[in-house]
Image (cartoon, rainbow, N blue to C red; front, side, top):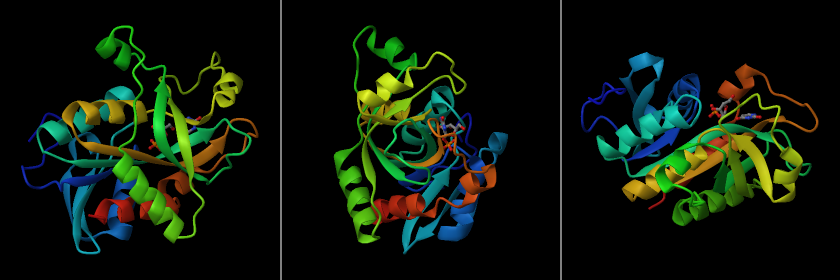
Length: 234
Ligand SMILES: O=P(O)(O)O[C@H]1O[C@H](CO)[C@@H](O)[C@H]1O
Ligand SMILES: O=c1cc[nH]c(=O)[nH]1
């Protein structure tokens, strides 16, 4: 058991999907995995282990924001020896060419989070996806006939931010905003593990288009299938 996960060693697979929303974790386990066992209910941050096409996979809610995901991924890597971590999250587009329900693979994650300032003290570290996982996810998307976007996303600390400079960030190639990927990539690098964030655009900050919370919870299947197919490739 770790502080926030009441699983025994061995209960969690070495490959894990990480949605922010614990109910998305439940949906993924119930919809895509077989022989599912729930291993965590601490704080209702559900975690499950099952199989996908015969391979053992876990799925764990991480909560929202850098501090929350940092707790879960640190415990998963440090205490449960998880080796491949794939975030399956939602994001808000700030780019005119990135539409609601598009799927983005986050090659890199810029951030205004304080976490990397605390770690790197003035150096502007570039949190980066694992290339092997990225390639596998991209190829899985191609095989499914999906046109995936690959690029830089922005991990923000403030969801309701009146001071954000979306236009400038989009000009510099940022596709969308979310709240966890920079921490996932930084911590995976620290522990020498593979990490990737795959995101579905849930809303558009330029057009005002949104998806419902039920849609966000349950209908982003393309992203989940891409993540699972990448996860099972050797
Ligand atoms: O849908 P999830 O994975 O939680 O991701 C996005 O949604 C939350 C904000 O609504 C933040 O966690 C953000 O990163
Ligand atoms: O973090 C997020 C997620 C969805 N939409 C946003 O604007 N931000």
